[in-house]
Image (cartoon, rainbow, N blue to C red; front, side):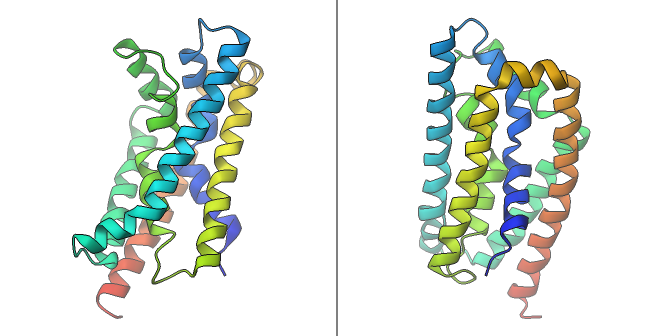
Length: 202
């Protein structure tokens, strides 16, 4: 049986719902209340669809390309680790993704659905935590439910974004994003070590 709490923490770290709040506020700055709600719902649904696609097709694509799952697990762990380092030492999620608005239309798909909610780390995690060789269908179903629950949290935070941002500010969101990055480094290291162990049959 999967560790539901650990899985929730993992997806909370890679999706970072709190860090999405400043991005959402920037995207919806000139929108009325009805439009803001619509953007929040569309972005959540689109992100869920993207991550579900990686759950369903990610491993099939790897199999078609004859890439061992262990190799993807090692590579995924390394990428997640580097992704986590950017969360800790680089620009925080709100700072980094808010810059996208300077050159792109303010849409629910970009930068909200991707890469704010369905981040690269979340896409990798969706594949790694639903491997057919490690998890049965029921465990994969539970993982998807946990993943969707984090997206629901992101949706609720977007709907309450004005109140939350007034309370924590950009600085608070930045701190939380960096803490999530630190947690993610440990998760990424565990994934890479598990891949090495499986690849070399240790």
